[in-house]
Image 1 (tube, helix red, strand yellow):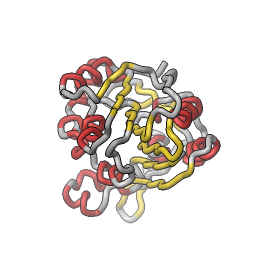
Image 2 (cartoon, rainbow, N blue to C red):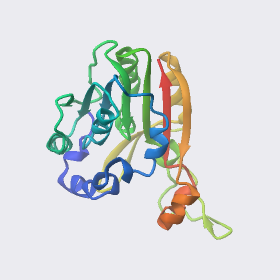
Image 3 (cartoon, one colour):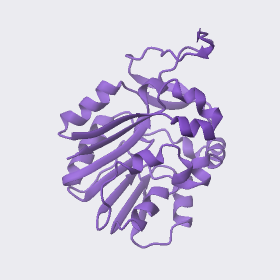
Length: 242
């Protein structure tokens, strides 16, 4: 079963205070780049895997989707999503993405934001996603960038021209990585970019766009605390077609 850190009170309290939790999609620095990857949503059926507070589900409906189904393992996240959604065309369901079953050719778009890096058996999930898409359907998702997930050993010290560098630790050693973020012992599944993209290709997806996302210079000017995030990409954004 997926580690359900979002029902950990300490984690959920911290997560609820993040900009993306308070401000929604506009509070996520990478949202503009993800939005540019989305297909036309009018009249489409959409699934959101790891829907959290339901921000994207509501966005998809506002953009004209006829049916939106959001899945999440966290009772806390789903309770917030349901409390802030008043739309019969948006449905939320509790599901472990490791075991999630999806109807065949039921969706025009499967979307996921920062959830797939928690999934141990991602191959099986992506196989089910491929089967659940109609021919020509899209998969659009973001994950923590593999380089971001494999940071240097604690205490590493290196400096070039007064700037910190960000070497990686065992990048080719795939598997679980444990970090203390908002709570202790959060487990994420590290895999190389090559592994991830080849899983998609192997299941028959056509890659449309791959972006190693980091804040723009304009974003750093507005948020100087993000400057260090230009030293290595934070997120990997992917758009693929069945």
